[in-house]
Image (tube, rainbow, N blue to C red; front, top):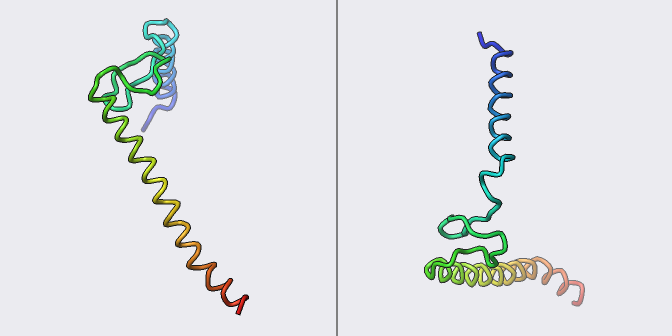
Length: 93
C-alpha cells in the first residue's frame, strides 16, 4: 500500500526546494530565444538572440506566419461564400 502521509511530505519537501531556489535570486529573470532557446535579456524584442542565423530564421518564420494567416482568411472566405452565395442567389432570383 501507498503511505499517503509520506507522499504528502515528499511533495511538500520538493515544492519547498523549488521555491527556495527560485526565491533566492540565483537565476536572474530572463527570456529564451525562440530559435535556439538560449537565455536572453527581458528587454530583447523580437525575442531572439544576437546570432545572425537565429535572426534570419525568425524573419523567415514571421513571414511564413503572415502568409499562412492571409491564406487562411482567403480559404475561409471562399468556404463561407460557397454556403452563403447560393442562399443570396436564391433570394434574389
